[in-house]
Image (cartoon, rainbow over all chains, first blue to last red; front, side):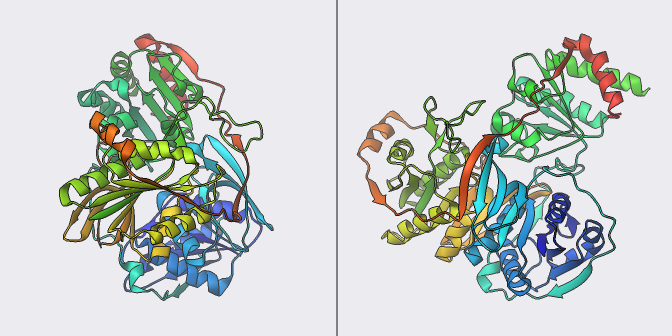
Length: 319
Length: 251
């Protein structure tokens, strides 16, 4: 059996977890899922649809929000009871963190960000390194494979399965397991609305935008296309835009239907965060910018001319 | 307040990576070395805490003896001393690395109030060493921290998530991993560099363990590599782009 940690944020499903469920099904064994926190029980329908027969719900009075060490303990308790062949999760910051706690509890190896997994003795994985620019072939020497599934390496595929059977259990938490937990949360820098991860369209600006005031036209185009604004690292470190909008290895990894990169040359760490986008359009004055080799379409020119022209042309075409 | 910052020497790769002939490593003959961006923020945070509250800042790394170069350049920022666990130059797996760090930390006379890591390494991206160290030392850990204050023995931290900012508090001693954006790392001053040459760097040896996550080899990730279709120059190319956007159903 393959056990998949399905992550959720206060009951809201993490979409990358569906890809982890899809990847788990390719390993030729039954798939069961685990959610941490009782509000995760509401996900029984969707995890069933993606092939999990059982949804284990770790429920505890001290798990009221994201509590990563408690997640690790709950996973450990369930693993010791069910003895799965592998535990998988999404290769997201939270997926990696929760499985790392499991691996630390069990003192077993963990392979993060795997694009391919073959069970065996030893297990074999391909995993992303160097912001996705290198693929490591590695053996994992352990009976239980603990691995996270590289974000966007598989498309989520439903099997139209019926709802998973819910099996609630109470993990035997120690006080240190919930010493670190979210105390409060505020919308902070994010403006609400579409988040980067969920956006179908992202219009991103880089150094070429020239300053915070230049982002007005980027916002306008993003709104017109029903999308959201992203940016490169130099933009956030210059304080032009909030960190929540940063796309890349050190920001958020995204894969929208349309990614428009304006005035972004394409540092390795930025490419790592957006190269899986379905269609990539680049607007850049430099025809040699590295980002062009990852793009589908490009306009060579100054974004300060191209974007306003594009915005007005789209308005006109929309009528 | 005594702070420890863990670092890793990594090659400063530009746009393109080249592999060694045996495909086991990155060819570094023509590359400089540095530390990961997040780790510069970790050192800056440590320096600021010691400036505000007194105490010491120790740096710790595991790597080849050449990693002394990275330790010295960070000592120049304001750290007090450094410890280098010397390897044979081979890459160690996460469990072996974490165990060697834990042994070195336990061997220190100083009981560090706060241990800081960068959120992820530039090269291996294993996402686990800090957590293994936290478990071994039985300390709480907060990861991916984007703002941090220490008040009355409590670390007050925020991390940025898709939905906004999450607020955490943890009593010291604790471990945090920090992200780029936490602060603006300073450049070393000339006197800082002069002093760094004389600051102590303890060299230690550790025995490699049989890796449980065993690298077989590396390959370059395939890129789209077809290159972009250039629709034209400047605003004149906008009608062609509008057609493309219509075709893919963007509006």
